[in-house]
Image (cartoon, rainbow, N blue to C red):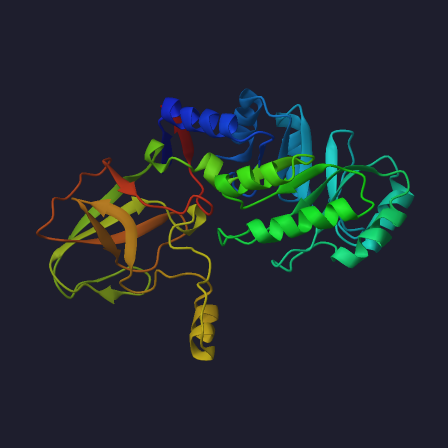
Length: 343
């Protein structure tokens, strides 16, 4: 099996350095599958960039991050008293967004470091502006490392960021460190200009690690091939082939993220029901696969298997040999690779 991510290391790292130099206070986000690279590799790259802190998504990701990165590690998911995976360390920074959580953390782990999060239009986690006074009152001996807002991915977030900057200035939260997400470079420059007293620190994942997709290529090995006649049945579902051609068995299946994607926004009840029924697996029947062969994206013969995919290739196309590799278009935030190769 071979489903590999190949990285033009020099070009990729050049992009990482450029963004880091252009973005003072950058906090690299390293969560989930590590944007396809793996979290440990990204932690090592973050260390080479010279940043003082990184952010992870959940407490389950904390032990590996503390081991792989020597600086501070902040957790984006909010601290909850019922989370059995919570750990405590001098380099660990918790996010808090409820008064009762602050009180519980202050009572049991009073030396903890925290970031207070405001509830933005995302409506996910955090304090309402009117709750900040109660939050401060509950802090006790907790050490406040900053204030954070997690903004939508609309690209028009300056007004909301400024509103929260004003709320922070008017509050009794004793910090001038302002962690933000999803602000454009121009928006970052504007808020820094208008709020010079704030240390604005952007938390960035996708546009850092995946900012130059041209430095990345995914290759999958052809594991087998079979010549087919029109009407011949193949696969688990014994689907009839539409014409003469070839069936290619290619490394990469659902365990690698092939054929899986986040459900799309749906406006109608019927469409929403269909999306839920699919469960995010779009590759049903003869859906277009991410595999490019002889210059074209080719069709799945049936939904991808766990570790390999069956792809139909018409007889008119140039047929790869067993052991050849083909190019793959993937979603790096859901992809998992057998190997990540820095060329």
